[in-house]
Length: 399
Image 1 (cartoon, rainbow, N blue to C red):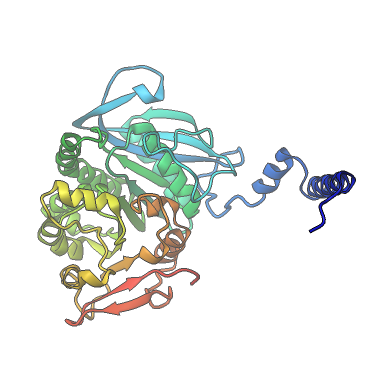
Image 2 (cartoon, rainbow, N blue to C red):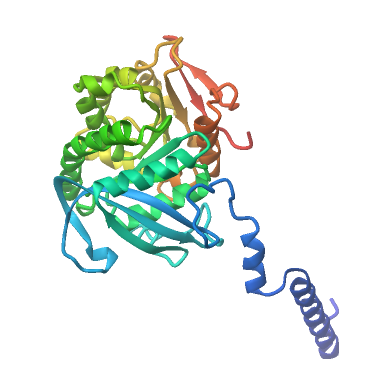
């Protein structure tokens, strides 16, 4: 075999360098600098969510209600509220700016979720209840559907990260509606003791979420009221509905909750069936539960709770057919009230628990569900049926 002569090697290197330089020149000519690329990205910012938009491009206004105890009067956002619960509700608003570089599938440090410069909290103000109602009601009345979206986060959320995640959900969902977060002190540490303490606080926080919903229905009166709860936030919702179910004034109110959406809910079968099933049929029009069979966080939750199956676990696996029947027991064969959606085929997240933050297909399906009142059939979901006749749905790629 003939060897390359030194001169030939130099020629090859020079040619490769020329190709690289020409390629770089063409890239700069077509796309410009990094700043230019970001300016191009600005033109692709989601534009449906205009009702909450402030004067600055990408800046949005959101609202919060929390049952956290204040930890001091420090102006530093991270020090404003601690991780203790108290029954008195605190009200406020916050303004954020989401950089165009933020997106689904971004790399997130699990210990410091959304503590990044891509989601900037520009302003946070405490409000008296009357001012809170007036400002939120003004945006609700400006929205095309007179709607309101309420977000309830899960375990380990500190106050600042709850605000940033709410902003992220509003940005990606891009629904033209005011958005608020009910924030509860789920940040009790990552230990087993912390998890159990957080579950107790979640159950207790149901009373404050119930108060929040009573206030919204009575004083703000949105025509379309949506709730989205993730993970242990489902526990808060379950206990809130138990309180509301016992309130005849709420049950008879003209305004009802249109949609309750639970994503990877960390709620046991027993709690779900005994505390939530009958109450949801009376107090809301639709319940959608998104689940995933590869959810590692709920597997750990099941171990912590001595084998109790969590509601957020999917039933898609062939070795879990009995579990499929158990989950589907809550759905009558001909009922459209409760919809179970398995996201396993599209769940590509790190621990498979956070698909509600990082899965485009989920946001696409959720948007269609909330805004267009589309059924699973019209949303092209794949239907599975158990031998007993109950059914649930599977979200597949590329639909």
